Image 1 (tube, rainbow, N blue to C red):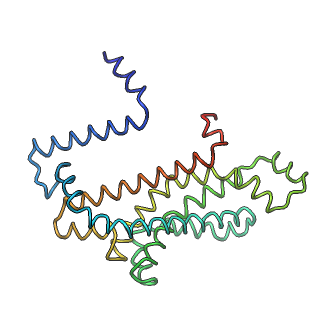
Image 2 (image 1 turned 180 degrees about the vertical axis):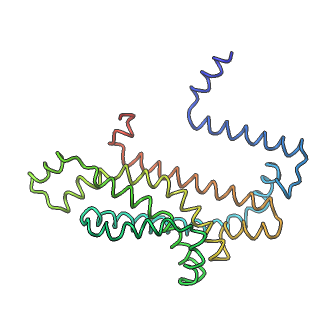
Length: 262
């Protein structure tokens, strides 16, 4: 029986395992809050949180919109800037030696610590939150894109040289396609990370968004609303991860990693 159960579990699709594990967690959570009589202000049960999600759906949807805008714009800003800088690094070793240490130093500063400073410069609002999200997404994409652009085989470069390809053609036809798997690998991190960056920046730099709602609800001891906002933010991060994966499968269908090879 144990062998059969183990075999059945292994044969389940990946998404089924995730959903089943999540369902088990919810049941255990509900049982724990009921049997141990945990006060809702400490840990609300899934049933209470579900009711809050329904009852407060209007405010949750309203606060979701600025968070979604900040995460999306910051994601585009950070990844675009990182990709352009990586191309410059590949063309100029001097630029890389001069700017990469600066990027590493900037990445080493905790976002919570640097957000108030940026708020002083840019003010409270979208400019600061989008800039913070851009910082969160910038460094992983910069490192991976630089590595990907340099992953081209020497044989392929020599072939393009023999064919008298220009530098622009080499980038477009060889280096950028070679870098795409590395870029998407970074974006699987920066996609959900952009949501986290938006939440953190909203704690300091604005009076709207899911991050602000979490902080405001906590100060009012509306703990079930705090959990509801956390769940909405989590779903947003999971959606971002899924969209990156979908784009990767569509754009890299030719790559061996999408065909189960290598």
